[in-house]
Amino acid sequence: MAVLLKNLTARTPNAEDLAALTELIHLCENSVGSMVGGTLDELLVEWQRPDFHLANDAWVIVTTRGQIVGLASVWHEEHAQISIFLCVHPDYRNRGIGTLLLRMAEVRARQHIRLADAGQRVVLRGLINNANESAQRLFEHEGYQAGPPFLRISFTLPDESELQPPISRRFKVDVSLEHEQRLGGVTPLSDHDALCKVNLYRAYEKELRPTGQPCDDFTGDLQALGA
Image (cartoon, rainbow, N blue to C red):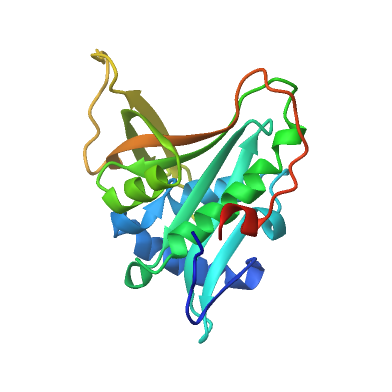
């Protein structure tokens, strides 16, 4: 299926886009139907990895007026588990932006296949908030399989040192919901102690190479994926 984006252009982001990307992601964070893969803080951590290259591993969708309305980014673990972050401006949904970004990310992910260890399973993976039904439909339409649900608990502790400016400490923990969980010895945090967020997620995966399959060169492009 071809994806046609009227008056929109896809390109790689640059350092000058950071402020606009921050604004877009904050907007998407308040609209669960337009975001996949985590938070701005988590994304920026991945962008600091030495094996992440902005020119190859991220894409933005820009209007004719220069407004950034979509973002996708991928990073990898040993070229075998490739993760995706995807964000679409709430006012620009249902125009094919998410589909195009997801397919561009898959093209890049498939380039990692030949770099993964021989016979190792290679997957492309995105975390989707359980309330984000539109993203779930998109990933399922593109051949992704939903994993079991889990809770992601993230919290920020205030800085208690004398450093200026103060530096907050951020933590997160994922709790599987496949089986009954018994959590003991946990001290609740008050609003004064920390800012805490709890979200229900599912991991959606597409298998790009099954375990044991020989490594074949990948030379596909966007046209091969119908984008």
